Length: 205
Image (cartoon, rainbow, N blue to C red; front, side, top):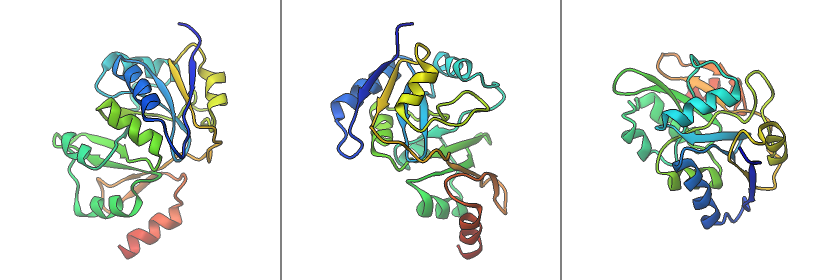
């Protein structure tokens, strides 16, 4: 595979044509490193089995660990058949767009982690791709997540197709992950949103 390309996209005023170019890579089964409101992620078409297999391979991740999905808006929840409970609706209203991955059931009873990111480039990339994106953090499994395009390129050069560089060093903290399929909810990972903030929200919702 040739060297991974980098394209520069202003995070404040994103160039829609460049985002469409990146989305075309995803629609063809490619993998694109994209900035989010937390860390860089590796984005792939969640409906493309070959792309997902490749994502597992380059991250050196066990296939018994499913990828969470990024969505562009809450309308995608309906298309995925997600059961949005009253409690989930309250968390969505409070924390989306943002740094909270919410695990919910779909209409087959399968648990899916979902996040609506608070980053314009990421959301527009999802819209232009036309599908929810599998988007784990841009790191090898067990390593710290990448917070800049330069770091992503260093790790994944010749392994992924494209890196979007927004010129920003990101927080370095992954999203928090909460399981709302149980009551009370279970916090599976404390990340950019603290356990205290989530606990306080549950107590006062």
